[in-house]
Length: 240
Image 1 (cartoon, rainbow, N blue to C red):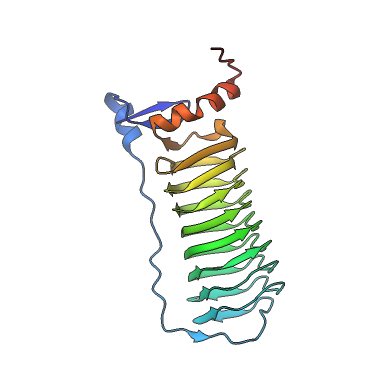
Image 2 (cartoon, helix red, strand yellow; image 1 turned 45 degrees about the vertical axis):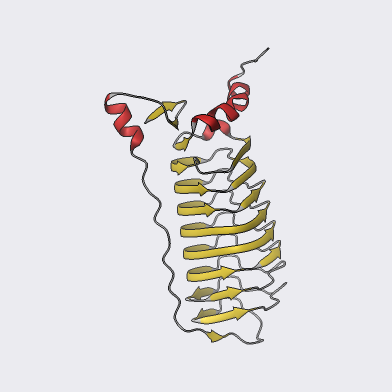
């Protein structure tokens, strides 16, 4: 059962009537179902601005510093590639897989990711501000300083990964789930949430924006852990 407290829905509490029915209705996230066709190797050529990449495999390539702004990746697989300072602003990734990718300062600002699976990446300072993510699975790995400011996330799952100081400020989260994920020092300032399921988060550490959890679902244990932040937000002093 559920209870609504301060806009967030808390599981494990008995309710009655219409409120209980509404609170139970947490819309499930639609996960991507990526089935790649046989892929052709990309080869040694560098990325191109507004390039068109269809059915290609990028394997163990160092794409550091390359510029592919505005490019389209359709039915592509990127495996073990290095993306240090790679510029992919405004790129479109559709029905694609990224696995074992690593990089610092990758620019995917204003990019569009639809039906994309991201596995076991190790990245830092990745720029996804203003991006649109729809039916995206991020599983395993670790991402430091993920910038999702002013982004739109619809049907996105963070699963068994570590997000260190992720920035969701001013973002819109609609049907987003955190399953076995560690959220450390997350910033939810100005975030708008709907059907956001935080119950599965292994660590839920919110640095800013705890007042923006309206539309999220948490557990009673998480509520207790967040109590000091909630008290500080409303100006309550807790003295033992």
